[in-house]
Length: 433
Ligand code: CMX
Image (tube, rainbow, N blue to C red; front, side, top):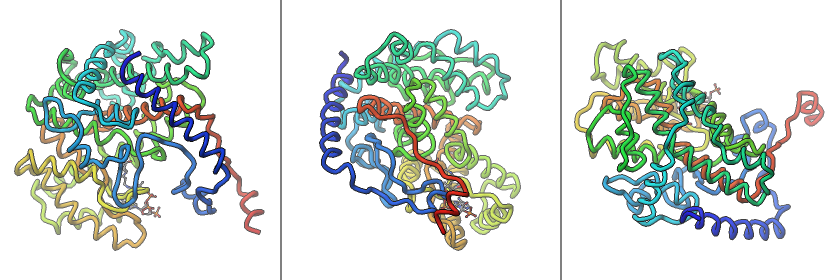
C-alpha cells in the first residue's frame, strides 16, 4: 500500500470510531434550527454536512485542518520554490498532518506517474470549436476520462462497501494527476493554435502545469501557480462546487462524474466564474475610461454605474465570509513581493479601496469585502495569461484536490445518500397558520 493511502486508512479508521461514539452519545443534539427565511434563502448557515478537510470561519477565513493560509505558507514544504506545494495540502487534507519534504516529493512523482491522458480525451476535446468556453471543454474532458474509473469498474465487479474508500482514493489520485495536462491542452488549443507543450518529468505538479501553459518562463510564475493551486483547493463543504461533489458522490456515482458535476457548479458567475467576470469588468472599465490608470473617482463612478444597471460587483461579497478573504490577501502579498508597478494590479488595489464603502452604503450587502476572485486575474495577466475565459479552469484544477480529498473521506466514513427535505407553498401556508 502506498504511504499516503496507508496513513489515510489509519486516520480514517480512528475518525470513524470517534464519530460512531459521538453519535451514540450525542446523536440527537440539535446543531441548527432552520427558519423559513433559510428555506427560501439558499440554506445559508444550515449545518447539514460533514466535511473533514477544511473549515471556514466568517471572520478569519479558511482553515485547512486547523492551519490558516499564512500558517501554511510558513509550515508547508515548498520544494524548489518559495510557495507551499499543493501536494502538501492534499496530504494534509487526507491525513491531518503536514508532510515531510520526502513525502511531498513522493507525491509529486506519483502524480507524474499517473498523468497519462486517455487518447479519447484529446479526441473529444478536439471536436469542440476552439472558441467553445474552456469550462465546457474541461467538463466534457473530465467525463471522457471516466472510462478509467476504478470505482465504477470495481462496483460492477461487486466491490464490498468496506473498499469504497480505496477505489475513491485511486480515482482521486488519477484524476488530480491528469487535470493539469488536460487543462493546458484546452488552453493551448483555444489560444495558442494547438501548439502544445509536453509535460516535464521532473517538475512538481503546479510547476509542471505552469510549464505546460507556456505563458511565462519566470520562476515566479511557477510559484504563483503553486500558491494559486493551494489557496483555491477547498473552502469547506457548503460552497456550490463542493456541495455538488458531495451530493453526486453520495449516490455512489464515481469521482469522475461527481467532479464533472462539481465543475458545472464552479462555472456559475456567482461562484468560480467570478474570476473571469472580474477581469472582464476591469477590461471594460479600462476601455470605457480610455486609461489604465483610472482615478479613485473614475472607479467609483464605474462601480455605481454597474450597480445602477442591476449587476453585482464581481469579486466582492461572500455567503459566509465577513472580512477580506485571506485568499485575496495572500494574492495581494504575492503581488507586493513579486510584481512592481503593474497597471492592472494597481487597479485591483484601487478597486479594493473604492468598492467596500460603496457596497456598505447599500445597506443590504452582508460582506462588502473582496473574495478570492477579485485578485487572481491581474496576477495572471501580468504573466501573460490574458485570456480570462480560461480562469475558471485554473480554479477547477485546484478545487479538484479539496473535493476529491473530501470524497475519499466520505467513502471512508460510509457517508449515506444525501436527501434533505423540500416543501411546497401549500406546506408553507399551513405551517405559518
Ligand atoms: N455587488 C452587488 N450586490 C451584492 C454583492 C456584490 N458584490 N454581493 C451581494 N450583493 C447583494 C445581493 O445580490 C443581495 O441583493 P438582493 O437582496 O437585491 O438580491 C444582497 O446584496 C444580499 O446578499 P448577501 O447576503 O450579502 O450575499 P449572498 O450570500 O446572497 O451572495 C455572493 C454571495 C458571493 C453570491 C454575492 O456576494 C455576489 O453575487 N458576489 C459577486 C459574485 C462573486 O464575486 N462571486 C464569487 C464568490 C466566491 C467564489 O465562490 O468564488
